[in-house]
Figure: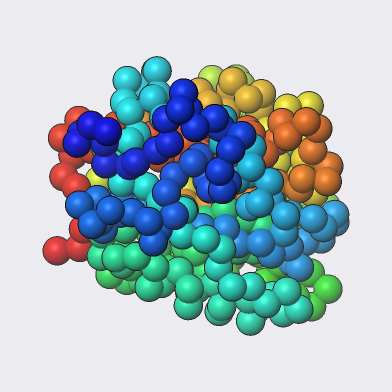
Length: 333
């Protein structure tokens, strides 16, 4: 094994990908990372929770399905020309403890787990859901681990839905509410928030009011198709080195490509297009992320779970290429 590799991976030509314990992208378990490669740069963890959904449940099985499907996610990124294992120390930190009978109590439980995971001053976290309600405690953990920035974190959000609904059936911590809660608590700055991929009919035109009022930049999928990529480019350029959180809901992808999700919305990104959009974030300083809403029972041949594994790879590659170009390594001063 070359000393240049910061992440030790099984050699697929010696240990086949269908053998061994499934971890995210075959990354080592956190407890198995060698001392020379600690603290890890990114710790990935599952959040098997879906009690906050408003339609089809089942995303609680998402982390397990993504671990299984991601055995075929490799580590060299052709377009970015970066090998993740050479630049990043990566680990699977297991699953956060969940409380499936209370959305608010679960948010507290996930936050308590995530806030102290690995080395809070050096390790960035990528949460794998589960439904989108898990984004709130994970954003909160990232905000705290980055020193509680007064302005909050910037936000990059891919979704078919705005997820700024105040409450549904009396519940304020649903998968439709993570960003309104995070904005209220000062965890993210809505004026430095970009939401990409909104599509499909809404319940009412007033669903757009909160984003408009608070300065969120909303880029619908149709706008992106019509030349809106420049909006993403300008947004990333304006952010410069600002610390940003990336939240990715798999339902921004058209269900023809990602059928395994609980609130499908037709007319969205192809798998190729979403990779293009994610790669265009090159240069963004991403300090935390989540990938959510994979529902294995509605999946076909693990297509959605495998696609989620590749989305995880694309997110990690953004940090790898940023570091490989000489950007200062993360860490709170």
